[in-house]
Length: 435
Figure (tube, rainbow, N blue to C red):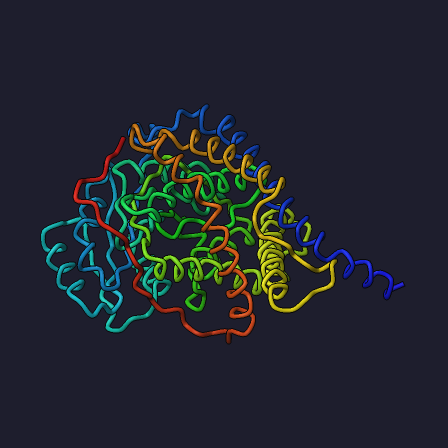
């Protein structure tokens, strides 16, 4: 019986690989579209999300903005200028200099002497982003913490939108905001603008509908300090502390919300080296949390997390299916393979056309949902560039996943994750548009 099953599988391995590689993205695209539209109709449209018109809050509890910094002398003045310009009545800003070797610490001290709302914490040596965030959370005067990167530009009303959720109920442990890309001069920058709408924004909306969010954004996220204290704050041995803290909060039954009107402007990598390092780190982060917490998911009371976990496992399976197809094709160029294993071409056939049309529909739906959060007049340009996303970024996602899984499996637990200075792309001289 087993021999017959193995023979059947090996005899149809090509069809199995192609079938999964085709049907997985096709199925998930419609899941994300339906979930994203449902989110829009139920929450986004009904509550009139507008970044420039924050919600009216019955109370305005204090908020602490945490800004971990490592070698940010080129960016930190702008980051803190935007944070300090927030239109929220009661907040402080805490900048954590995590052992920077440039002038970051000197600049922070200079700014702290001029701004009463700004406090500075200095680490003598580099401890990693997780430890910097932990130091800021412990030193904060307030229960609600807004965490942004050292090169991020916070929208003036972002704090209000975050507090709107955190103050709405005692079980809301975190809120993830909506990063928007500033640098759009190169092809990689333009494609990533669409990615944050068509992929990331749409997925977060859909995940919010069916239960749990895979991760808060490391660029902008808000937390309830009580929730962080219960789970032990951020782990310092995970390469993506944002994914890890998201899983632990939700496994502890805290709710994570997504707020698309809480905007934060960011610079993304625009070199292949920088993009590779960033996406490999993201892929390793997903593999790490699955490795560490997979055994905790097999409980009925954690059933709302099953959808996110299955989505991740399915995406990893897709990456290896695509890798298998490419590998068989390359081997077939050198060594004759049996007909049932032979891959004649990697060029799209009828299934590629169906998948391409589905992608265009997905991109259109998601960019229409995110249109209000983008500068006016950018829709047509962004849509033109995002159609090239599958050609390069699906391949990049596949390769980084294939590389990340074995690296994570054989990683020794307890190794502290340190900072890696990112590629921040081509800078624009003009200011950020809020509309």
